[in-house]
Image (cartoon, protein in one colour):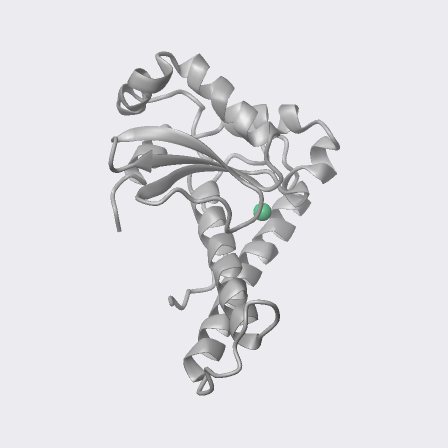
Amino acid sequence: MVKLEIPKELPKNKLEKAGISKKTNEEHLKLWQGYAKNNNKAVEALNQRKNLKNVNATFSEVRNQKMGESFAYGGFLNHKVFFNHLNGDGEPTKEFLALIKADYDSFSNYINDLKATALASRGWAFCCFHFDTESIINVIGDTQNTFPVWNSNLILAIDMYEHSYFADFGTDREKYIDSILSIIDYNAVVKNIIRD
Ligand SMILES: [Fe+2]
């Protein structure tokens, strides 16, 4: 259980250049801050909990608090990864190209898979580095806390919740994805491989 510092502002990024309005970004920061605050509330409630009896899997306070903590922490971390790699030019680095070579052969194959993952998702497209195979996998996230693959690190995230694109792109999810991909900083992406 981890208590989080509330983010004060978005990291330096090119979101407005990519067509995401200032208003959307301001509201998005509030949501990010809300995940950190709610994570801390859930952690506090669980730390103070004395009664671990009368717990069940259908409806119980412990269940709600633990689910809430997982959702809020995921919401914080997903956004942290997302906002921290949006100040680039969308061009892959040599290190990133080496990572995708075995499974995707080319950068365009990798991007096609990532875009398909994002379009098939209801919440997030996650790109993860898997420590067993030392390779990259793209994973659907329908919510803030689904569907992680164990023993991997989240290194690239695309927010596919409507709040991130609807006000500026309407239903054109593909145009939004292309805009985000055009500002990805792959140096920042590769740095996320390191466990911290
Ligand atoms: Fe979001």
